[in-house]
Length: 447
Image (cartoon, rainbow, N blue to C red):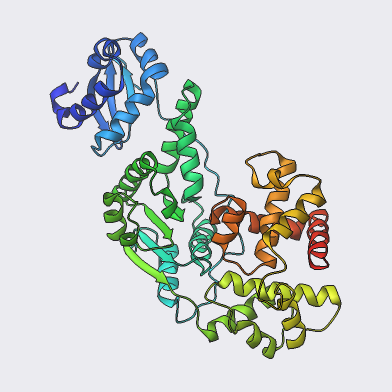
């Protein structure tokens, strides 16, 4: 069996962190009695003198030990215990958990459905290269650009292609909001079962073959979350795993992000998505009209593309509003109809008649709940669904940016995107929800 001194260069920094994290009596009674005997991949193997020691460490000190290992930053991330004289792991042994491919991907976000133009051809090629050869030349891949330009579409297209063509690879797609919530929930709960859940959560992210994080800018000013992500990032890159990150800004313009994270991100491949030109806007409109199984005359497409701003979401919203007006009034698509449909939301003074308040009020009244219910934090099903419908309708009926929609509802724009996509999908498969959404639209537009 190996001597402790053989692993001092790895184990001593861990001991120093453990001294800070546990009581002196636990340190002297248990931690000092541990002997490092091997390194197995990302695990350090620690020998205990008795089974009683192993049981106590597994039940009481395991989470602190993992925290110390991560903070020591010595290239490993977990530990295993073996009782002196035993041939195998006695406690805290590795467990194989069945991995299920991500269920939070939008199946419509594929490379085939992405409209390529001069504004995004380079980033499209880089994303496709990552999907075809994960952890190849573009690792990490950092995609940045303004809201509504297609970042989420591209990074989910990577995930969808790998899941379809390389099902043996473990793909994790997560928004930074979800990642933050999971880390914080585990940090502030001291129940043993939750601490164990925290360890499993850490292992879950660090066992990914491809980790995709959307809107990384939202972890700014969250030091504990940045710390966790930093070590996850380092371990995955060291193991030759693919990381894909999206942001609304390049790393150098994220001052509230730790310097070491900005350095890591900048060390990869950076690609920005620029706003589409007029020709690309027309191509996007044609693509979206085809998806809606609707033939839109070229002159109407040209009208919709004019003065539509840089946000592709707004462009799609204009198209959806005009198609809806055509069905509602049973009139063929024309420039006159399009002009009237878009001006329904604008008064002569340029002020929107359809406002966020109108939509919130209509949804609240329809479902017999209050405005405060929609704007609040309740996770009850009877509140969450109307809140998501409210997000969807704001995206459909208003021309404001997603960030502004989020501010109206007290949510970040990734939550708005998730809600919009979820209701869009539910409308496709659930006739009752589709009818509810159409009824609320009619209430709003006929006011």
